Image (cartoon, rainbow, N blue to C red; front, side):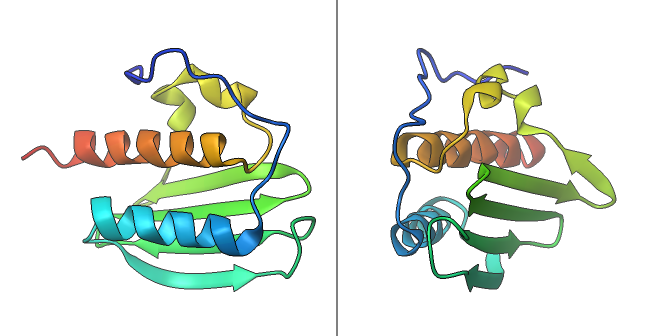
Length: 119
């Protein structure tokens, strides 16, 4: 299932400060995925060291991380690990935790959740 995100161009030239990235993620979940709760949140203090935030509901656990290695995520549904690259092949181009890349990652995650929980 490919994402409907057309003409996505990864922004690997900039990175958000941890507090801005964390707030962006929390705001996204609060507005779009209200049944998910924060399980844990760690700000390691610098963009180099990054952050880790974990959200979950009864079916899915989502971890978003940033460090000197870039933006990363882990999605677990039960015992299965989910690759968002199955929803959009552009993930191979994401390296930095820029606003563009973070918003893209969150929107594809929401598409995955919506596909798992049709109304």
